[in-house]
Image: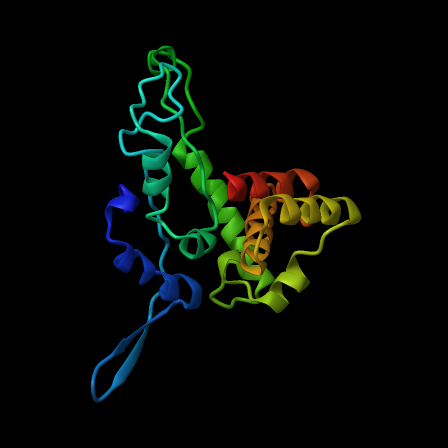
Length: 199
């Protein structure tokens, strides 16, 4: 979904059930039907109505009220159901003109396939990935050492995380560890997951 706040709030709020429960329920006068609904939501939005808030050139023309009103179009409960939130800055011109090459998609693909295979073995062939971990699965597959527990406790306090937010951080940290071929979630894996949650 491009320009997320431009969709009606009513429509956005309807995404909460399928994001949380992975089903969609349709109710009519004489019946109710529930369908499976497992999907990945990718959405983008500008930082403000004009799109330039935070720009180093100072081009933003929005008032604080306009910026607050724009951000409020996406509710806290909906944001709480989104695992990763990233702020992406404009790419500087010199970087666009640079000849340096980034990691190829084929290399990234191989790393993702290896992580998915690891998850398949972890869940005994069940059709499950880390995003589908239940609270009991999280306890079993996302144990933390004392340092990691302290870091997460600090994040819970500073970011005012809900129980849902806590679980989502652990799922993302488990995935980062899998991509790193690590059996345990390290402080670095957890810190990266917290960073994605706190943006």
